[in-house]
Image (cartoon, rainbow, N blue to C red; front, side, top):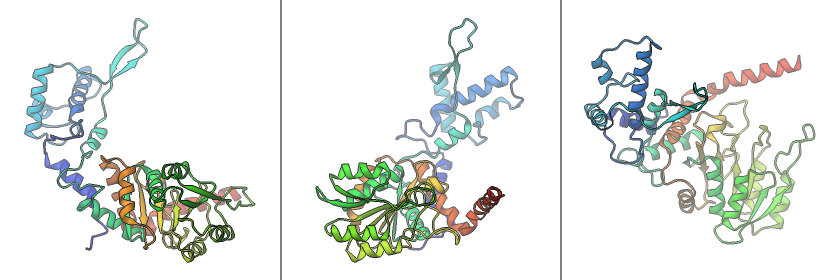
Length: 375
């Protein structure tokens, strides 16, 4: 099945839902932000009455438009009228404390979400007809993930709404498929790796990282260290390394992948800080292109997704993908954030459409900064 790389199927589906004007009879409880919209409109009116802003609109316009300028569906207008009949003009809830009360006490002032936040809430949907299901994708999420696999060079890609943490947990729970499974693990890893080992009831042989003599920073285990560990522990379920480290430092993964595969072990890579790898000739090669079997990337760190947006990429036959899907469903929410997933879709589209050009300005800034330091 072919997909156009310049589309963003999941994001576009959310826009279509927003523009459809459907009334929500399901979660989330904020009802596409409707729960706050009256507060925003009333706050706007209070500003108008106080002369704080000079905006002119007649009564019909105020009824027929939201603060964002979009038309309000007839059903929404009726809903607002029912609210007003029930509550009158009183604004409920959402208060903040103003410590400058005239009598020295704390005075309540209204806190209302800005219109931009309400616009985002209109895209905050759940698993309904047309929006697909992250844990059993058959529609727009499946299309978005297939486009991501094509963009990053994977055989299969999975969207993560719990950051790279959820990907690391899932990989370890997949390879450690029985109690006391042994894994060869780089010593300087993220805490999510340690937590994954704990959850899996696994044992670890920690591999000493190579330390860069110039900076004194730990990078990842040398080829010789990995070779010795693989030979000494042939029963290990896999090898897990972190590349790059938090300072952007790494090494060539190809020889390490070859050592792992010769021993029949999958190579798992926490590439949280390297989602941009392989996307420009001046950037290091990606872990996938070096032969890694399972790679976790924080798309929100070095690319343009929302915080907590990440991806898990897999290739080859060394990982049980059916079990991996079950593990992903086990550690991630059954109500995943659609705005976060849509941001993953858009981050991928940006790379697909701009390619290496997406990094040209950033790399030029790095070169200019280096020259400045040298001077």
